[in-house]
Image 1 (tube, helix red, strand yellow):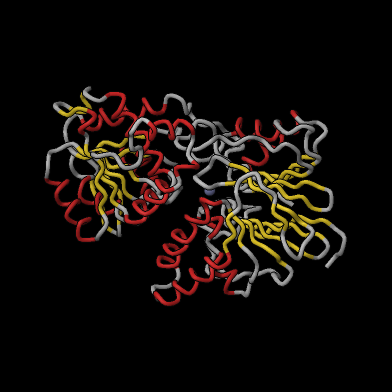
Image 2 (image 1 turned 135 degrees about the vertical axis):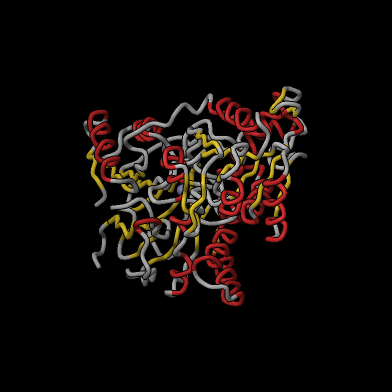
Length: 456
Ligand SMILES: [Zn+2]
């Protein structure tokens, strides 16, 4: 290993968009930024850590999405003994996320899960935003700043050998419900930046709440249930927050014939989403000012009166049967967000055949998922395959975009060009080839002095 040399290495997410894991190495000692799982078409069976970790002095976690933290159990299993540095909210959310990931993808052995969680809690070092932390055993210091992506998300500033290296993690966009918008770093020599949406912008985020309102009213006009497939972390809480704000603003206006907005029933059917929503409520100090103001007004953005949480599997089956038969308008949020599994599947099976019901997609639907099939082919083909069985689609299907947790192209550009003086180098990672190439060209034009490179 080279001594006296500063290196940035990528152990994942260079070619694809999942499995984020990067290393900053100086004088033979390194730190890892994230240790994520490969997902979707990039999925691998062998998740064992395939790089040297003896010299790794710390792991810094940007946020708790599984493509950034999913391989932490394998890192611990490989003998990693260093601290896991993360923001205070992430320290609270991470054990819940990994417990669920272990149960689904790894083992049902409770003892084993508890052992991993215990190890994890012992290693977690919650670091307040904006405070420098030296990494013992290395000449590197790290500082976390808000990334505005999900609660607790951070970008990582590293001071190493007189140079400032910034790892963006996943960046969010302004106007996110609940979250404080990210600010560009004050200084930076090398910026390692995600480029998921490097080639496109999101639909306007400012009026999406009214588009959500329209979609809900339209869906509920003929009675029946509105089903919203949603990820349990982030998206579910964003939607609850928005729905509560619609209830507060439109109170006695009709959401559906004979049903005022403030009496609209909302069901969250997901134990994991319920758990994360509870943790989000505990993390109020980290909410945006707007969200805190609502709490100060006596409102409960994530636990309003009309909200019912379904936990047990039996209650879930009861809820599916009840709602499939009843003619009472109701909004149901259930995971998974792309309908590839989870409780949303039972709702779809029970409800797709009835034209009174509606499905509303608020998130990206990846190629090959039932969500994509329902959205794209459902209207023409009139059916979708769920668990190897064909289901007729008579329910109406809607989509509201603008709820992405990721920065769009302009947001990424604003982040990079907001740094003065401009970084010496920008490395684009975590995006498909097209997105990286388009962003590389844009940044190249805007920052002529900066060397904009892709991956390594
Ligand atoms: Zn993420």
